[in-house]
Image (cartoon, rainbow, N blue to C red; front, side, top):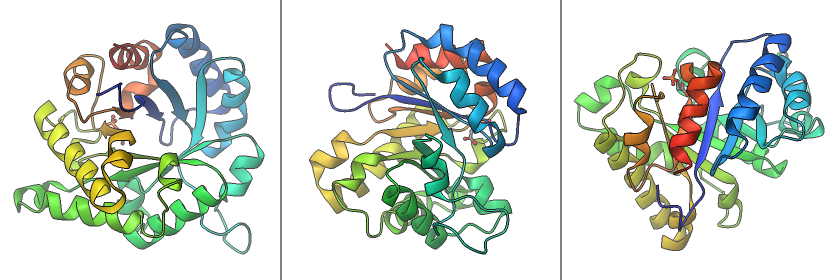
Length: 255
Ligand code: PGA
């Protein structure tokens, strides 16, 4: 993390967990533990929890985010939610292109680009996920793959809009598996993403961009991961569901 250049952001990704009542409870448990955070704190929750989470987070330093949005403003897209709908309820952050969306719900680099476009147009901050499968790492194509995902997702994004994008590097083999990338592996790919951004938008924009690591980040390994210069925060799955663990990661990012 280089706090002279950019903001550290710790974001929880609750995935398909917690009812609205449980969401309220969890936000209320997290709030006092992170109130003095020296980084931005976000909790991304299932759609049905957003209202409850917003209410519980009111007056705290916790921002609430969604886990996906559709690229159209409205229309015949059964089961989908638009960025405008999220903004209308006061949601400012949205995760786009999570590997579980890519793996199980047919998300492609092109749909990631469209969703990113829609979220930016609606005035949201996007947490854009990229990352390789184990086979791709073993084939030695991590750099090419992550660079491609980043370039396609950022297609049409202006330099000014880039300020509203956080990129999360999430190696798929490390998500929910307990297998964390080593701090050096995480830093290497976060730096590579920054180099791609520099190539597209210049060094100043790249230096200012928050690049998170995600994949089994927890209270025990956060310190080491976040000590690396290009790891500017984390996208936290499992550990974001436990107030103390999440708060410990926020504390590590606040140093
Ligand atoms: P994990 O999930 O921390 O449970 O590995 C991270 C993510 O999927 O964003």
